[in-house]
Image (cartoon, rainbow over all chains, first blue to last red; front, side, top):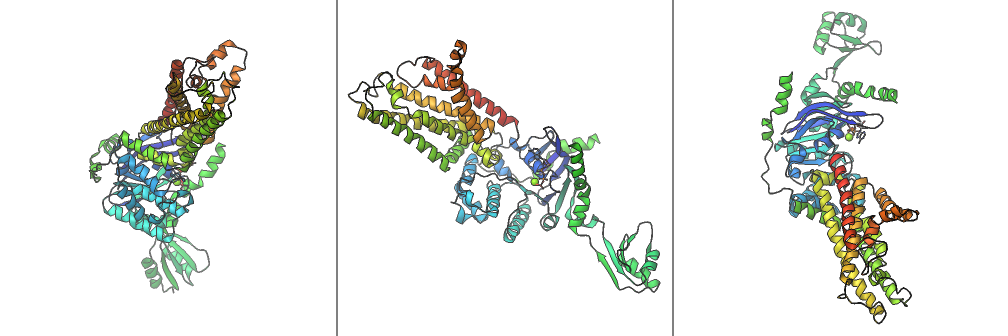
Amino acid sequence: MIRAHGLTKRYGGKRPKTAVDDLTFEVRPGTVTGFLGPNGAGKSTTMRMLLGLDAPTSGRCTVGGRAYDRHSAPLTEVGALLEARSIHPGRSAYHHLLALAHTHGIPRARVRHVLEAAGLTEVAGRRVKGFSLGMGQRLGIATALLGDPGTLILDEPVNGLDPEGVLWIRNLLKAQAAEGRTVLVSSHLMSEMALTAEHLIIVGRGRLLADTTVERFVRDSGTRSVKVVSPAAARLAELIAGPAVTITSDTPGTLDVQGADAEHIGRTAAAHAIPLFELTPQAASLEQAFMDLTHDSVEYATPLEGAAA
Amino acid sequence: MTATATDTATHPSPDRATPAHPTPYRITPARVLRSEWHKLWTLRSTWITLLTACVLVLTVGITMGSTYDGDDADIDTVVFVLFGTQLSLICFAVLGILVTAGEYATGMIRASLTAVPRRLPVLWSKAAVFTAVAFTLCLVTNVVTFLVAQIWLSGSDKELSLTDDGVLGALAGSAVGITLMSLIALGLGALLRSVPGGIGAFIGSVLILPEVLTTLPLDAVDTATRYFPAQAASSLGSIEHVKDAVSPGTGLFVLALWAAAVLGAAALRLRRSDV
Ligand SMILES: Nc1ncnc2c1ncn2[C@@H]1O[C@H](COP(=O)(O)OP(=O)(O)OP(=O)(O)O)[C@@H](O)[C@H]1O
Ligand SMILES: [Mg+2]
């Protein structure tokens, strides 16, 4: 269980910047929760606050019922992968993990186990300096798993991973959630989250935009339309027009109808003997729905910052 | 409205749904020490700086001993054979800075503080491990260098044995001086969070600044500089009382105070600021 209440972070300097703005949310155990938002939305900042690395300007957050630094064995409580690299490149993967394991008295066998799980056994003795982006990311995941934690907080874990690695993460997260653990994972990619997550927390410019399930998000994304191709498009448009119906037409003979379903359009056309060449329901893509939702928070970002300068 | 807010804020019951982990794993001070010990010895830079430091002191000591022709009769014998410590001090200081600032440069500090979120035990453990390693190594190197140099010095006016009055004290005092000085460097690294910044600050304020100040024709400044770290340390490493320096007891006290002050400032920054 992760909880944030009124979480706010402002960075100082000459132009104070609110990175996270009054965020309140809960992440429940047993499901994968996707943490989404465009660049600069405050995802990484929120995660750093959850881990006690950044102090909130105001508000509180707890992991497993306590502030992170109040746990007597934090690595067994929360496993974290941060956005910025958090590994000394001069140390080998094995010694990096072992040094962290020593702080909690975690045995070597566990270190070897997580190296194996991350597919790093062969390179465990090599210095991290020579690791590829993906190998570094795998070591980060191995670090997160070290204490067999009840909560995982992962900042863009699929960054730099090959397709096999992406699949590994996806299955890993689902398996961890199925065991009753709490999993919070950030991403920019709605499509990736739709495959992995059940719950979604969407932020933009530091504010909470949506706290919902993937299913409901898809259902509510609302902008579904029906594409209609007919030689009598104009007449059909008049017939189905109504207060809740929006009709647009890009090319003559083609309509894009929102607010009326295909069945209604088809019956109306039949009743008036209007021939139809095409009648296709168009599901809005998740990526589109995500962009529509975060549109404002992205669009206003640049002009506002420019004005402040 | 207030009701809902307090409801979510003060109701911790659903948190108990988090799977409990009845594990023997727990942070203890001894374990954090062990972790820092492990971190220190698993980096090449540690071996390189320490080995360089020891080799420098020994070679300079041998050179001084084997080329002695009675010209420097007025120089204290321990100071004479340990001239190399002027160079090894830099090695130890650099290592101290790497131990702390090196973690900020690489981002390792985020992993360290996620593992030990109370933060201060990490700094104290780093300081403790470093102090133990630096002191032991300095002491051993000093004694060995002294004994080896005596191979050439026997029969000269600098012939001394370990058991002679003040010899062991001076050899140990020199080790304490180097250790505390490089502990200041470690603290500067933690305070400034930058390797070049730490090295610059150490060389600039600890090694160069007092030398510049002593050139000023002011007695008050002259007296004050005696209490600077390097000048206080110089009182520790010789058999005879050093001219223009404080007494060894005062020197030790002042030097320890400097180290404590810098580490205290570093601790304050560690507690207060984001990483
Ligand atoms: N240490 C810092 N000092 C000043 N500003 C910061 C700092 N860290 C983050 N910010 C600002 O806070 C905002 C949020 O950044 P954050 O990294 O949390 O976003 P994000 O959602 O993780 O973005 P991305 O998807 O690109 O990773 C950004 O505008 C960033 O410039
Ligand atoms: Mg980020």
